[in-house]
Image 1 (spheres, one colour):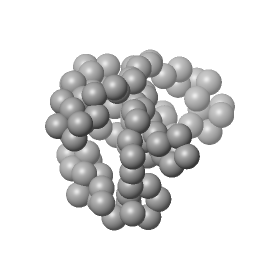
Image 2 (image 1 turned 180 degrees about the vertical axis):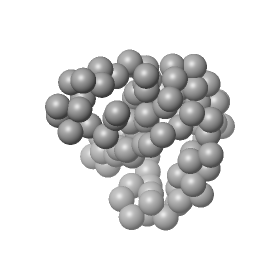
Image 3 (image 1 turned 120 degrees about the vertical axis):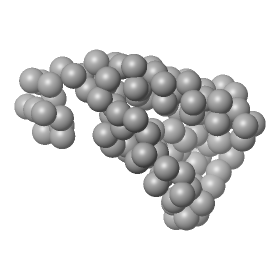
Image 4 (image 1 turned 45 degrees about the horizontal axis):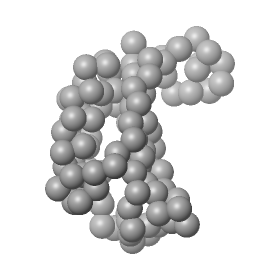
Length: 101
């Protein structure tokens, strides 16, 4: 069963197109993480927040990524990271058109 990793944190920027340009290499590297399926990137420039919704194959791979990502963010001076891991209910998700089978 896949798992959702929800992450958000305060960030001064960049956002929008500048964020996409600045984080392209990071986005490509996430594709190589064990158990990673997909990510939706989130941002709120007015609140100065960013993060993402990730889908991983297992709870363990989600937790392993979160541990690594939290350390990486700390290296950028971002220490107040909010994160939760959730199991996915595939039957209800399918009804609401979620891309999980």
